[in-house]
Image 1 (cartoon, rainbow, N blue to C red):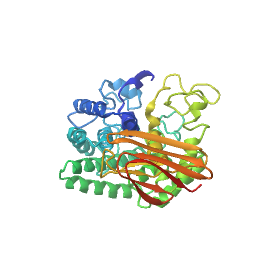
Image 2 (tube, rainbow, N blue to C red):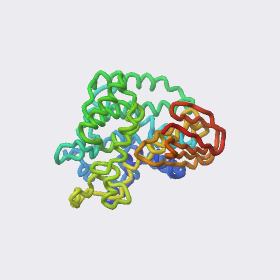
Image 3 (cartoon, rainbow, N blue to C red):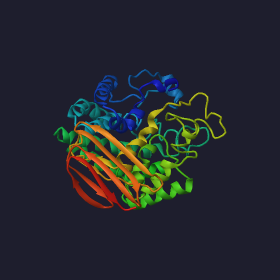
Image 4 (cartoon, rainbow, N blue to C red):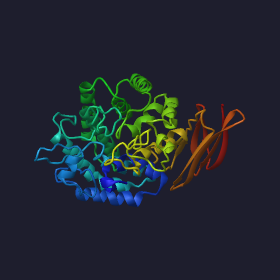
Length: 396
């Protein structure tokens, strides 16, 4: 990691937390870090961009915040939302209610803070945002993609309130006031942003439940990707991109992006000898030159969040929201003809959950291991699996 990328950037942590928790036992780390967030939360409810909060105004201005001599930092969407995204992902993966208990008052203080800085009721507008940071549709000389900052911030406002409501219900709290707030946010968002322009705007509208016509929005997203010759999403769109496609009938297109080897893609850096995720898709350009000498980290884990799609969609390991900690499991693999096989496993608190699919004699062979009773969905057919190892066959 290069320069201030060694700091605890909240946005990176938020979008990678699901992948992290599937790959390692992250409970103690994230629970400790949630306490750090609480310690650094401003009295207003503002959550800083890095935890521990060591950035000065000069540092923030160099990152794109306004240099007006009297700059007062505000939270940034997608970054500060670490306080809802991380506890919820950890709770789902491990069933640990205590992280929700610890985080709940911090979440509430943050959510109550957003209306105090927004220029419009029931939206988040008019404040500094990193936006779709490093989006590939950025204007020349800009670090931010073309997605409307107010659109992106308001979408994350809706999303973070929805997660807060879920957390509150787990803790058996009365969330009726925030449920009413959420309905007003969605209603206002739909009136204020009836049209989506960029890939990221389409992705967030789909994944955060903001579009009234998912089929139309998904079709528009697919058309944009084909027109653009691949992804144009940045820091806030990319983690949800493949999910938005596969959840809406475009798994083949999601695989197109996953397996793509030319720029921009996850595998393009591999063709340049990379063994770690880069900050920029083109950190090293096709001609061998550098994207930038001063903002070009070559060990920058955030885009590795794509692995949660590999776990959940490609290999199909899905936990059930009403049974956190993998007390229930559904295995719904989505194979692709371009690969001979794919496999993934998660060491859950209940035991190993693994899913492998491979081509065999013109068919797909599925090898599934579960420590609890589970459902498997193969070629649209659902069957119940008892704890243990199972071999199933699907179509070619």
